Length: 119
Image (cartoon, rainbow, N blue to C red; front, side):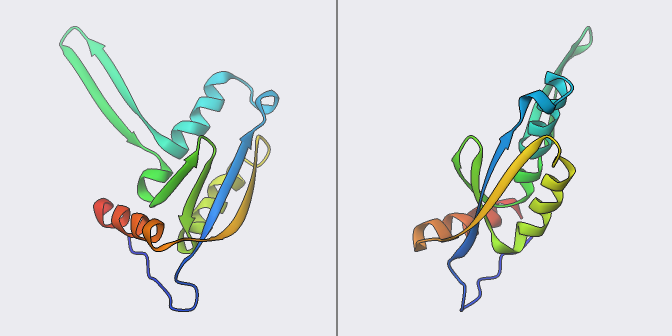
């Protein structure tokens, strides 16, 4: 995965804000599935033969992002298409908005550094 910094819009990124509409989910487990698909999760299975831990990746583990709050994060412009596809799958139950933002050098470096860590 690569983030290319373009000269004209080198500090531009997208802020994504979402809100889950609790009443529209069939169950709490369906709502949890939305969060698991977005953020990933750690599953622990305990059997007689031992304890097994599985890391299930979420979309944001593959896309460099800067968390702002629980339901707000920033991604590079290049990854917006993936994010739109994900939220389109949940459009009946989750509302989301996007806003272009300018990143200062420190925040831009955070995105690039996270990208390098994921490679």
